[in-house]
Amino acid sequence: MNSIDYYIEDIQACIQKFCINIDPSELTNTHHDLYTDAITEHKKLFIDLMFCTSEDEINFKTEAMISYAIDHNILYMFIYGELITLARSLLGKLIEENNCDDLTLINRHFVAHEERIATLYLSKYLEQMHHKYDLRISHVLQLEDKKLMIHYEDHLQWMKRLITYVEHSKDANYPELCHTNCEFGKWLHSTTLSYLITTSHYKIIENLHVNLHDLAANVVKYAQKQDLQSATLIHFIQRIDYTSLEIGNEIAILSEIEVSSKDSLTDLLSRRLFDTYGHLAGDNVLKDFANLLRETFRQSDYLFRFGGEEFLILLPSTSEDAGYALANNLCEATRLREVNSEGTIIHYTLSAGVLFIPYDSSLEINENLLKSYLNKVDGKMYLAKKNGRNRIE
Image (cartoon, rainbow, N blue to C red; front, side):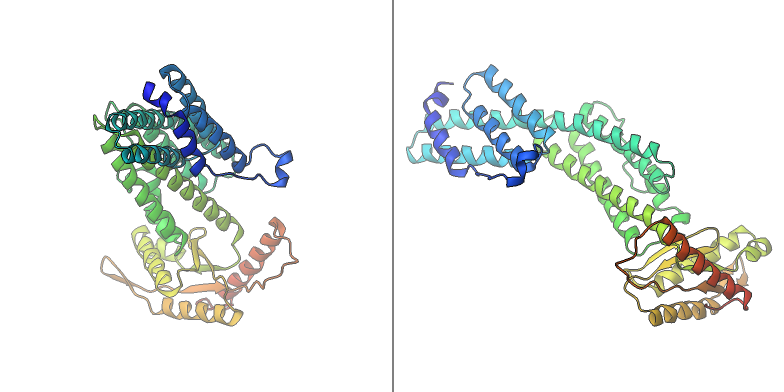
């Protein structure tokens, strides 16, 4: 393109105006994968591309730049920002010169750059996502005790189906778009999990999951367009990828809490209830107790179902007196509850053990320490049952 040849010096001058000089840390002598180093190398590739004039050379340099960007997690918006900054600077110069002929040609040149970069970035980003989610699934499968991560595996499989659909988008084989009907959503909104409530993490995961499906629905709808813009899909897909990772982080946190926090337990007297009134009545009692827990505790507290009729309650940043007061209030509130199950009024009671764990920075948090907490609070709970039930120890 002759006009570009003519404006090579102007392009170079424009690049110098916005080029960010990043000084690597002194520690980078022994590290070759730092983001600052990657940005510096990327800028070299970007400048090389901007100085290309032939179609073959442009395609080759674009491939090199995008491959490097994907491998080093450089966001599309960063590349887009560089391109637009350069284009606006050069086009502004032409407007000042009232050079309308070259203005049109150079604008088309940068539009072609933008479309080429976006299309290639989307393709390579989807390839990377395929590999990444295969790896995550592999890691989950290798876990000896998957705990809650087994449900995250369902989500990862859902993500793979979405990626495949975006890659092809020629059929209706997209994943379930309703957030309550996918396998992960069924578990998340199941009755069992509603008993295993956490007033903070559960809501975080639920909000992330709803937003994820909303984004996915927009991606599926947009991918069906004939004149779709790759840049728009990149934005949606990167947001979905980020949200998916956040869900994984929250599930991992819940998995650890489920194992490491069995240091405060409550036990409902519902085995006899199940035998006497049936499982429907037992389910109604558990639902009623779950609602009571929601009403009683703070959003910063953690509430889990542990075993059939036992619940784990964690109270961060709570004094010993306040912890016992909350437990006694819960015990009294439970005693006053009435559950109407098919015309039968059911009363139930609560026995609980409370263990105060003071902060001690010298303690090493390990499996033996956690087991000792569990044994102590277990003993307190069974002592409460032995001493007459419907009480706190």
